[in-house]
Structures are given as C-alpha cells and as structure tokens.
Amino acid sequence: MLLKQIDKAVAYIKGQIDFVPEVGIVLGSGLGDVADHIEVCGVVEYADIPDFPKSTVAGHKGRFIFGILSGKRVVAMQGRLHYYEGWTPQQVVLPVRVMARLGITTLFVSNASGGLNPSFHTGDIMIITDHINLIPNPLIGPNEEQLGPRFPAMSEPYSRRLIALADEVAAQEGIQLQHGCYVGTTGPSFETNAECRYFATIGADVVGMSTTPEVIAARHMGVEVFGVSVVTNMIISDEVVDHGTVVSEGKKTGEKVAHLVEEIFKHF
Image (tube, rainbow, N blue to C red):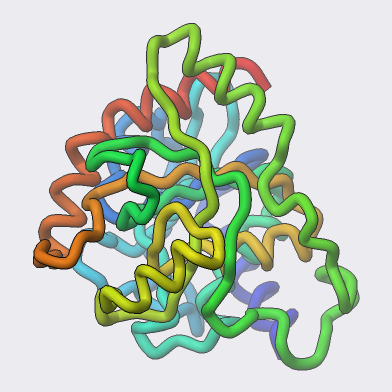
C-alpha cells in the first residue's frame, strides 16, 4: 500500500516535469528565502498529486519546487507536513520518500525552534548534530524492504561530513553557528516550563514540532542528511510565544541560512 502510494505520486510528478533531483530540501517555518535562490525549472502543487496530503499550516505553501541551486539539481519542499495536523507518521514522511524515489541522495532539512540551551540567543543558527524523537516513529508497521531495512541504524542521523563542511563554509563566510541536539515533539501546543526543563535535562538544546520523522525516513532509505535549526525564541517562563513570532523570526534569519546553504552546495 505504501509503495503504491509513493509510486503513484512519483509517476504523477514525472509526468509533469522531466527532472531528476540530486538534493532534497525541506523548508521550515519562515525559511522560504532558500526557495528564492533556486533557478526554478518547475513547480508541482501537493494538492495536484493524487492521494497526497496537503499542508495546512500558515507559512507553508504546500508544493515541490524543482530547479538549480549553486549548480545542484534540487527539489525543495516549500511547506512540510506535521503530525499535529492529523496526518499519520507515514503520511508526514511521504514527501521525503517521494523525493528519494525521484533520485535524491542528500537531504537538507531546516526548521524553526525554541532555544533551551542558555548559551543560545534568538536568531542563532544551530547545526543539528543529533536528535531526540518524541513523535511516533514513521517506521512503525510492516517494513517495505524496497525502501530500507527493518532496523536501520541511527548512530549518525546527521552527516558528520556535511557538518564539517558547513563549519568550514561558515568560517569562510563569517557566519556564526551553534551546534546541538534537536528534540522533536508532537505539538501543536507550545511546551510547558516543566517540559522544557525535562527536555534540557535529557540533552536537548532546542525544541520543535517537526524534522525527526523526516530524518528517520531519509536514513531508512540511505539518504545522507544535513539539518539546520533557527532559534526563533528562547524559552523562558515569562515569555509568550505564538506561531506568528516563530515565522517572523525565521524570516529574519532566512537570508543568512539561504546564503549558508548556497555556499555548502558549491563544495559538496
């Protein structure tokens, strides 16, 4: 059933555009500036793909953008799917699986997050070095051997090679980076103070409501992953956070993230 759904989506997309991407990009809340740097060859709306979930979150347009970025053939998800929207974990990662079947071997994921590490600040760019997944695992259920193994290793969910490259590029471009662990939660409510203390205690530096299922699915299919998180707010007891703040703060840092991604693409 899963394979049929993936193949149906892939067949439709191939019927719309003759393009084999090598890199996939997932654009998080407020980080659409990366898409503005793509030399667009074609666009496919999620709503037009048969039996494909539609993004319902403000700031997520819900479409695939195909084109060239720094000489690389890319497909960008302008709008991701979230577990809190009511989609199953398998539906949440369907776009990533489709991109992998279209040909990508590398996935760049981005997100907006709340800062837990007291040394971080609003507007910081954090390279994700590891994660803690508190969202139901998208691999639960029968395993499709054509997609990947029953028990995929997750000792290196984020490519050390690409992290090292990002550090090198950031140093050359004068971009300051943080490094840390992202914890993915179900949402959609923002975190309580007690939850934030708990997340920090178990090793998280930032918290968000996405990304980890996508990374699990990508690694299941053998796709190399690089992740970046923009700290859109620091989580403190007297600060009230809303989605509008997350989007606006993400946009403020979006151009810097776009430049970093462009430069990384030139070197790998």
